[in-house]
Amino acid sequence: MKILVTGATGKLGSKVVETLLKVVAASDLAVSVRNPEKAEGLKNRGVEVRQGDFDHPETLTTAFAGVDRLLIISADGDNETRIRQHTNAVAAAKQANVKFIAYTSLGNASESSLFLAPVHRATEEAILKTGIPYCFLRNNWYLENEIGSIQGVLAAAPWVTSAGTGKVGWALQQDYAEAAAAVLSGSGFENTIYELSGEPITQEELAAALGSVLGKEVVVHQVDDAAYADAMKSAGVPDFVVPMLVDIQKAIRDGALDIESGDFEKLLGRKVTPIGEALAQIVSGLSNK
Image 1 (cartoon, rainbow, N blue to C red):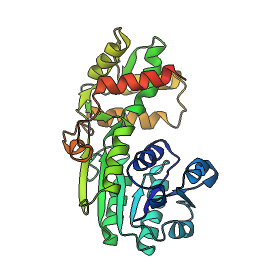
Image 2 (tube, rainbow, N blue to C red; image 1 turned 180 degrees about the horizontal axis):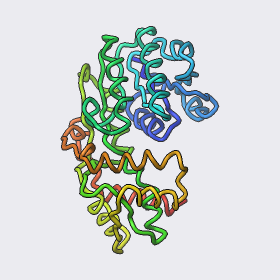
Image 3 (tube, rainbow, N blue to C red; image 1 turned 60 degrees about the vertical axis):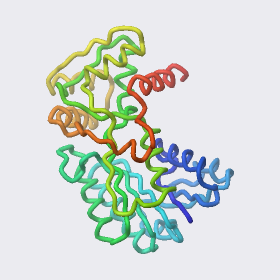
């Protein structure tokens, strides 16, 4: 059985690959990357490295040849670019006769109000149209997305948010990676959807958990969208990114990521890493840099 992971040198992809290497032989694993030089380390460990570029579909058809189980990790970029790239990848999987597609989607993708949701809806629909057995891994929100705010707190800044009492099902990328690896290396996951969400908590609750890790109170500033945008600009966030961050805060405020689910446990065979432990891991990682 040949398993292939796209985006394998990225933050999530590299974690999926490392997790898979604990349970499958390196010879059963392939990766598709835009720049094979970045995957030289994997090649040296016996993983087959294939060149594949979502903007060049002909490379993907070759990269996906002979693949039984494919993980398409959602790409970065604006919505239009991502939809085009994902559609290319799905079409190539169909052309290469891939037997199973797992896809890293978004929590509640079919109904979500989050501005990122159209990408994931379009990709899920494209996969469904192929008739290839699938598993949609609807990832809620990576705790690592909050590293900028955590670094701010470490530098004595307050936790700034315009999300109000909206809740998020944060979890570590490692937990999402292990869930994906379980699907790719296991069986019985054909035509399934998993809502992968940690316990939904508010920004205040997250900040309080961070305060417990740091042994100090973390002050939370609840602001409106305009003030949040100003705070992000002052923190050095590029101008083109700021509206996206504001949209994310608004979607959280409206409940887009408040998703209760026990699906993580089904795939991991354990509870998701507790938020305090997860934050401690991130803080430790930042302290060691």
